[in-house]
Amino acid sequence: MLKHFLLLAFMILFSTISNAEIVKSVVVTGAKKTTIEAVQRHARIRPGDDLDQERMKEIRENLLRVPQINLKSLDFKDGVLTVDIEDKWTIYPVPMITQSGNYYSRGALLYDDNFFGSLGTFVPAITWTNAGMNAILYYQDETFFTPQYGFKILAMRRNQLTDFKRGGDTNQQFESRMDTLLFTPNFLWKDHVFKGGPIYLKKEVLSMNGQTLMPRDEAKGFWFRHHWDYFQKMDVMYRGFITTYNFLCVDKSSGGTVLFHDADVAVSIPIKQSFVNFQVHGHYTNEETYLYPKLVGGSEGHRGYDKDSLPLQANAGLMIQHQQHLFNRVFFSPFYEFNTSKLIKPVYAGQTLNESTVGAGIRYYFQKISIPAIIVDYARNFDDKSSHVLVNIGLMI
Image (cartoon, rainbow, N blue to C red; front, top):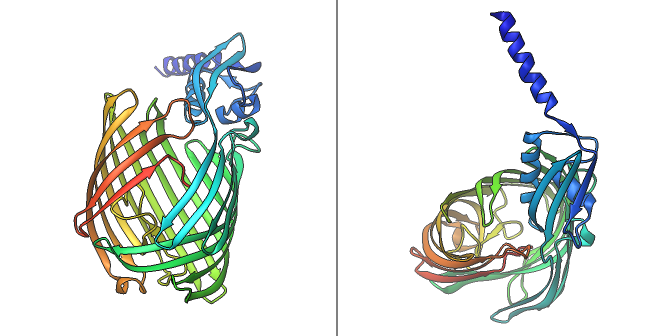
C-alpha cells in the first residue's frame, strides 16, 4: 500500500514538473506606449522563469489588474510568451476650480498614468487660492525596481476649507494650510502590498477672518499602509474584496505624539451584469484639536456630507450599494450608509453623530481610459435633514 502511495505521489510530482516550461522570451504586441519591461514587471514574469498553467493564470490576473491597459490575449508557445495589450488613454489635463463663499481655488492638474510607458503615475498640479499658491508633485510606481519593489514620493502644499454644516447651515468654518513630504518604498507579496516610510508635515489652521486657531506646527514620523487585493478584475468592477489599513505616528513640535489608525474593507459581488457592494470602515486618532483630524465627506461611505466637511477624531460606518446594469457600461446605484462619528473637541462641542444616509446615482465605466468612471450621486442625510450632490470623475489626489 505504501509503495503504491509513493508511486502515485511521484507520478503527480513528475507530471507537475514536466508540465512546466522555461520562458525563453516575452513578446508584447499592441502597445503604443507601454514598455515591455513594465509589462514584465507587472506580470511578474521574465525570461528564464518556469511557466505552467497555474502560473499562466497568475500572470493573466496580474495584467487584468493593471488599470492603464486592456489585456486582449495571452499565449505561450515554443517558449515564447506573447502578451497582446491595448493602451488606454492615460494623460489628462484636469481643471481644478473651487468656489465656496469667499473661498476660491483656481488651477490645473496634469495626470499621467503611464509615465514614459512605465505604468507609473506622475502628477504635477498648481492652484491659486485666497491663501496663495498650492502645489503637488507626485510619483508612484509599485514595480519601479523589480516586480516586488517600487516607491511613492509626494511633495504637496495644500490649502483646505472645512465648512461644517448642520441642517444645511454653516456651523463653523476654518482653513488648514499644510505642507507634506512623503517617501514610501513598497513591497509586493502575492495579493499584499506593504508601504512604509518617513513623513514630514507642517501645518497651521486659521479661521475665515484670518484669526489663528492653531499656530504653525511641524511633525515628523512614520507612515505605513497595507493593501490586501483579493479580487478578480472584470470588464466592469471586480469580484472579491480589497482591504486597506493606514497607520501614522508623528511627533509634534508643539509637543506630543499623534497616532492615527484607519481601515476599510470593500467587497464586490457580481450578480449577472450587476453588482452588490459592501463596505465597512473606521478610524481613530488621539488628536482632538484642529491640527490633525481626519476630514471626511463627499466620497463613498460618507456621501451624507459635503467634501472634507467633517473634522473627526473617530469614525465607524458601513455602506450597502446595488449597481443595477442599465445598458452598455451605464449603471444605476441606490445605496444606504450609516456612520457614527466623533467630532474633534473645538467643533460642535466634540459631539458624536449617529446618522443614516440614503441615495442613488448614475455611473459610467470607461473601457479605453484609465480613469475608472464618471459618477454622479444624490444623497439624503436623514438625521441631519440635508441633501448632497457628489460628482466624481475617478481622480482623487
